[in-house]
Amino acid sequence: MQNAVTDRVLDGCDRRHGHAVDARPPREWVRGAAMPVSWRALGLEAMASLLIVSLSRLSSRCFAARCQWPRLHPLNERTLTAVPHHPLIMVESTRQLARALELDQPSAAGTAPLEAVSVSLGLQLRALPVERGSATDVSVRMRVSDLSTQAGHLLAHRVTAEYLHAGQPFGTCTMRLTRSAGTAPPPEEAMRSGLLHPSAAAVGAAAEGDVMLARAPQGRLVIAPRDRRHPEFLAGRPAHLPLAAVLEAGRQAVLLDSGMTAAAVIGLRADVCAPVPSRGAHIETRSDPGGCRYLVTFAGRPCATGAVTLLRP
Image (cartoon, rainbow, N blue to C red; front, side, top):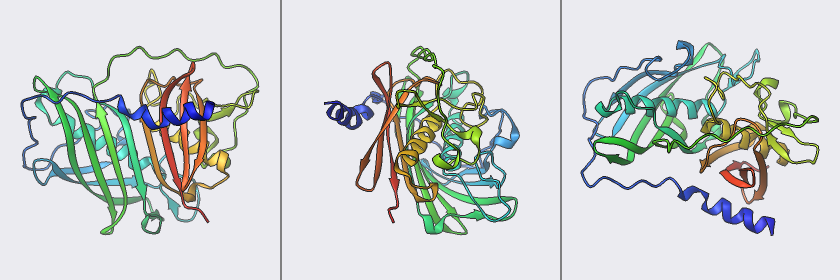
């Protein structure tokens, strides 16, 4: 019975972010010169967090960008040899690019940023860049779709970004952003003693502080970040878990339950349908052909669903 309920939730949780499209056509991004990008304007806590080097328009809804991914990014492993970049660096790059496009709209002045509620990531393992020096230069081809406006204000849009290294595509990230509904964040669940955090290696994390999960005494897996001030997943002490943190929790849960390594991940997806508390939500996984799906619940109600695609041996 529980599996049937989980199946229905997994199949239907992504249908709650629709917006009515304004009858008037949305303002298009107009072709022009390079668009300025500032780490302060993007709401980042430090210049070191800025991954965008340049951004320019190709047409009304198509853009080109260049990003730089540092070898010493907080999510990357600390090794003396070549370092593969954590897939969530691509997600954060896409979020920053989407925010930069949003700021280019006149109606963005004085309004809260759109919130990412859905993301899908695909990787081509053979083409993924590894870094032996200080940073990797990445090119991006990006387009915007599904714009929704109201009285000239941007309510939602979808960004699809293709990432290339040395002219070779290695990944695609699609992200949907929408105006926050203003729902009060759920209270954190009181965490009982006896929580057991898995090792970083067991969940594909680079450091113990990156672990997002713990096992409760009853055996259930809960979201419980070891570092409650994590510089990437919980930057700025958000009222609820950002989409990237939910995605990482799902990735870690699938790797933990499947016994696979981080190198086997070729696809990630997360869809948030209700605010996820920063601590205390339950997460359960279910094996599917080609990978695993996961469901995040709090107080018995679904908050998010997602999937991890794995390269089977």
